[in-house]
Amino acid sequence: MSNRYFKITILLFFLLSFSLSVLYAQEMHPKYEMRGAWIATVVNIDWPSKPGLSVEQQKQEFINILNKDKEIGINAVFVQIRPVGDAFYPSQYDPWSEYLTGKQGQAPTPFYDPLKFMITETHKRAMEFHAWINPYRMVFDVNKSSIAENSITRLHPEWFVSYGKQKIFNPGLPQTIDYLVGVVSDIVHRYDVDGIHFDDYFYPYPTSQHFNDDDAYRKYGKGLSLDDWRRSNCDSAIKRVHEALLKLKPMIKFGVSPFGIYQNKSQDPGGSETRGTTDYHQLYADVLLWLKKGWIDYVAPQLYWPIGKQGQDFRVLLDWWSHHTYGKDLYIGQALYHADEKDVSAYNNTYELPNEIKLLRQYPAVQGSIYFSNKSFNSDPGGFVDSLENNYYHYPALVPPMKWIDNNPPNAPEIWISSDRALQISVSLDEISNTEIVNKYVLYATTDPATLGKLPVQIIAGDNGVHLLSFSNIEQKLPPDCTKIYVAVTSVDKENNESDLSNIIIFEKERNGRWKGLSGH
Image (tube, rainbow, N blue to C red; front, side, top):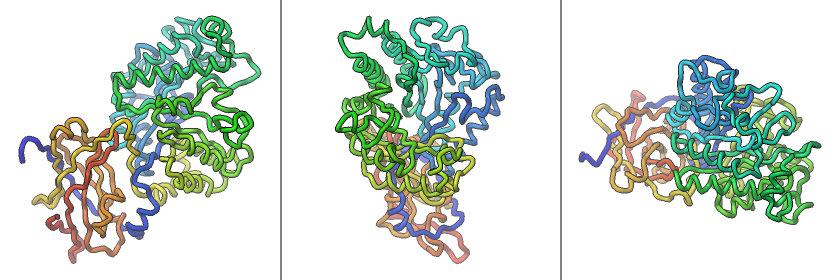
């Protein structure tokens, strides 16, 4: 081999058996699908389980979360790294989170960088890590929250609006946008995140209290109505973040998870047949404009209502959003927590969440799901986790590539059988591969060579370095009585562009039950 090749040795372990045929599985399991989970840190919803845990306990809890997610079939986590004007990483902008150490501004002891740790562990499992940021909420509860002396809410109280128990960045101030862009730029400059993610908290959900941005409106309103001005403030924030990402790391994805209703048809003919609070009118988030302008790469509306609910029907909203993507990706936020907490009667029906998956898979414009929230996987409400692992997510899926970000696949690997019966992979490092850096490999194994490349058996982390890796659980994806399988591998870059198939290796089962690798073709 020349110096233009790196070698990756991959051992094949054949375990268990599985009764579904590969052809049937291809019909049931999409090759590309977002299978995400929100990991909330605010008030310790998902991680860490409580403030003040030891560093080792924090790390082990997160590892346990990732291991279970990987086992279920999750391929991306959306981790809340800045829940309320605080940080789960050392930041020049925000103090350490109280949900980490118990006191805002107090670093973990012994010191470690939780964000770096979480990204590394996530990527080890060939999963994506999206940095979830709350852009405006800065104090969760003024009566209870720990607020550090260096919190920006103390240094510049004039930038904030008190609303209920919270302090919220005034979106109408230029300083707010500058600060937000600084936070995002700092994260993407220092960390290998796959995406930046905003949730639904733009202007606060309305109550009887007046959101007092009167002075800012008088100063910066520029003749716009109050509603149009507020929307323009959120527009400016989204646009500025988008521009910063393009300048710093254009391959990073940027998306938003808004409230599930954009506009009601009673308010606008183009709205959905729904009723209730909306992004456009109450939260001042003109999500469709952001999609049209290309400022965000995906939208993940929170459709936290069951199928058939009067006024907020999951089916109606799914259909509406699927026709308003403007060429960008659409992921559906699903309310796993309702099934876990049993706070909505419809979710007591064990078929509710599976039926939602079946529905969304009927729409080509829908690229998958994100579940809120991760901790509900632990209780397996209604057997849903088992359904994911054994049925809907039984075969792994690649996160769909965004062709407008990057459309260049890496080179196909070459595979062969070594003398120790292992499978080896070589990846060519020509000009394309130096640009399209490999970060994972996909294994395909089937009894029919014509179906190779259609149904992943396993996706593992890897790069252009030298590794000893294990592709396991192959035989369980194949008919139990098969005696010959065809194996091929592809390379996948950070943007999820997949190479062509490698050459094919044939394995035959010997009389003693062991598999023997034959020459490929």
